Image (cartoon, rainbow, N blue to C red; front, side, top):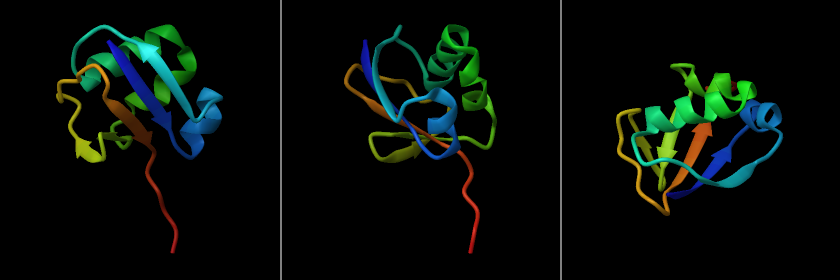
Length: 81
């Protein structure tokens, strides 16, 4: 299934891109993370529990079922004041 993946902040630096469209196997957000990590060892930060997953502009759990055409964004924790 075709999914748009967006990386923000330090994750963008680590992955070397802000956005990519991938053809991934169907499944959950957690399964997508595992697939991305298996594809590229730089993606291991995506599996960190503090990384937020946002699908189609909604924060979701890692158990969220993905659909073709979804846009998933990975956001590391933000801090500042």
